[in-house]
Image (tube, rainbow, N blue to C red; front, side):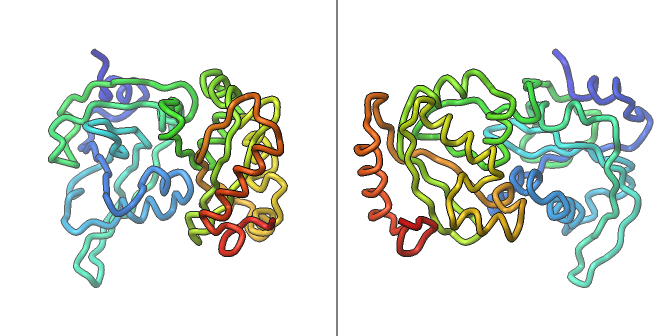
Length: 267
């Protein structure tokens, strides 16, 4: 069994330091998306605590909670000080420690004693997986598929074969959700490379894929897609589908979801 302690100590974490393992999980927030798209906001969340949980702590090893008892490693921070806020909460000053870049977002551990979200490092925890790439999200099912734009960029740019195989094998009607405004964009993919080919165009264009409304959003903020765009599939279509049939289904979903009247579609 490999433990997270072994990985950290082998990369220079001070064995004599006072260190806590911290598993962040909050039903109100998508913390992993916050970590990837707004690192400053994630750090504020981490540093703001109702109780003095990091008293006499030199370092925290930070994780984002996933399904069940799993947790994904996102970095090591040095606790440099603390202050008391007006609301009675503790505000910690932290700086990220370099040297763990090859492990960040890749290492998944089994979090022992899930009730306790912060534990001393002496509590050994098993490494379940070290994923390839920055964050390797495995394909499970078309109907369950939800990708933020950062995940889609990694999948396309790294050319993950399992994703390419399943997404290029099908045509379909897809949905882009703007999580900032709640507006929707409905599109269809019916080319030779199916969904893979069409979504690759979004990656290549920074998120707009040639759409007028999406282009305007990204012109105002080049990171808009990374912050707010979410991709999913509404309907699978056979490989033999014609462009006319695919566009007909696309128009049907536009009417159902009101994406022409209230969303991001322009036709």
